[in-house]
Image 1 (cartoon, rainbow, N blue to C red):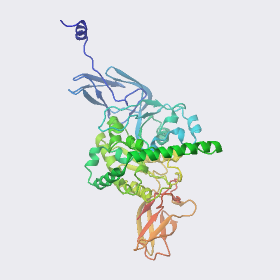
Image 2: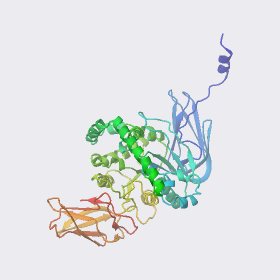
Image 3: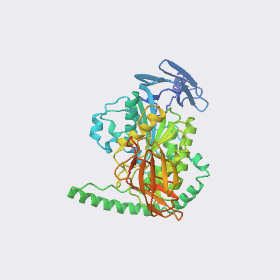
Image 4: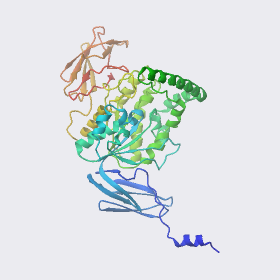
Length: 492
């Protein structure tokens, strides 16, 4: 005889055990002007009805419970709407522009740690700007469910927003007068290889030498020794903190735990699996990327163009869309070796291998002693100028600083031409240029601006074969365009 509980269960109709990705939550922003994917899981063969703004779409879950559909293109609206997905209701939904921000600590850095937090907070009553912080960690396999909630921008909440993403979004919002949704998926101290799917990286011929080198480096890592050294560093740091407090001096930065850092970044593709995969295919206009510091070792730096190009291609393939993609070139900072300028060069070169892409040059707004410069206002603004001009087709002073186009040897000098060079000008003495002859020895060079070109030469080099500008870790930016944006370092 069946138990009373069994009979009661049979009498109750089965309901779809509906589960949605975390990104579908109250206060979300949906992308305007393109089809909007909605997806999740439910009981096998369950019918899911999705409705918003007069639209109603239906999907049927497969045998594995997965279902998905696409809403028709939505019109941007500042009016709060309701999105109904099955038996779930998502409130306070806006339709506007959605951007994904990713990378390492300089993307993760919060508004409360950036310049002029009090001033930013005082002007942060911006309810049409929202941010979703992806809170999941690295994973060995691609995940479908992440963690996080959408947060409405206000004086009380803005301090925890990604500073780069916020100042980017604030500029976009002010120019377009439309809601802006920002998705922050970033982790400090992490290399680019953590953010690209492992499948894409394993299939890349260009990266085979990279992984061979990294395998050798990993073999050298001794967790026990690293932990012991870290404990000694922390003990010294504690003493230095006490001394600094007693003397009224700034507190020193706490040493980074190397074991925790390795765990946080996961294996190759670990952060893609844990922090990007759960967001796919949420409709976005584009992505902004701030990373490179963790790949600035001399051994890693030469591969960065391949990696950045692969990241953009891999993400776009998985989203099934060539969405806009821009990154922040590494700023000025004191770092031993040539890796820092090499990564900058790799970032510059990637503009030619990544379609629909842009780059914010930040050579003048870094901090020589701090790898986390606090001027994120200009970083976000420069990214936004690219987006407004190149993506949204708005009139802007410039979408980027001057980028080297051609270097033509002529009469013992180089004639340099640039893209985005309108109003080419020097700030202070025009310096930082060097030339080399056939022997490859670099010599300081004189430079002068003629219209939108720069003429470079050195008396010590009668027949120059190569030229470069600002080829240092911490150079002084001297060449700018009329919009006040600095030229990218280069060598030709």
